[in-house]
Length: 524
Image: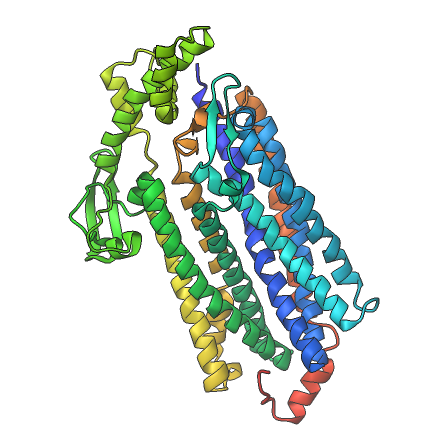
């Protein structure tokens, strides 16, 4: 019998640790490259202020990296403690990229980050630049391997179920690595990280300008952040569109839920700006729509429909019926019945085995379910519309506001050349600091909850992926994680605030020069 409360607690624990960890990851991914760009300018121009910029932003990067590592290590242990069935079932595929991440990317990043901080007086300028590059590369490679693993969870490819071992086994490693879904997920996630870091640098630089401190330093930092951020915005939009097309192809339930599409309407589908979904009746009580936009973005065509949730549920109902046949055949094979008819039946229906497993939670006898039990399982085979719909719109809303802030900063810094006197603009930029973190968290919620009720899409239901633990064990550890991670977050914020208050080292001469020259200097 499945302990639903224990499953929910396990999900909450992993969700809490993931969301806490993902506060730190995007900033690490992006700010490492921003520091590299600043150091590249320093090496090519010889201007010492860019070295000061590298050291200051590097200090904030180091604080964030340390807390990020501390919050990330426990997640890998949770696969063994809380999700042991998951680890057994798909460890042959999922474990490979995680092992490579630990052996190659993480150690590359961890090794060179130490050299980056301690090597300013030990290496020449070019060697140190290479070290900074390898640090940034390591952080992004680390993300790549993790996102390849996560991408396979969203779109399991090049894997075959083994009835003898009762687990999924990899067919081709490079097909998993080069999966279009995994690569789109990686490029979109790192683009979000680049936006996060750019907004972070922009907001803190705005704070310096508001305080009339380190003006030249702040303006030069802003120039790098705006340029990097606008490029990242373009990359994020492109990769997000590619990811949406892939989602429509392999996760139609997620696409329909995140767009509150209950009906399959004639193409091209309209896009709902806002809606009030009624999940019980499977309809929208209210919606404001833009004609044709969803069809154009999600299918990149005028004649391809976006499948509605009603049709998804109907399709899943048929897949559950096929899955019951596969589940029965598998049970017979496990009992020693391996005649040609049983083997042929399993081969014919095994692609829907995961759907048959859904009945373990919803039917008294999963091998002989009633039609009502099949309908309940099918209805619960799609994610929450409310959460995915509004998580997507929170993400899009934050990105849109950040785009306007980047554009305003560029206009007043580069063209009007009076950003230092635009107090309202600077305050808007500074108070926009939380936006990229909110957007990243909303995007992660959309990606993970949009896959439910699957741990592995169409393969392994979440409730069958957990370990055999008591609710008390999980609840106790959940409370401890929340407490410890909250302390980590407070420590990070406090350390960063203190670092910002101190400001960049060696920048006093720059402020004196600005006062003598009327405070008007070029950004670069």
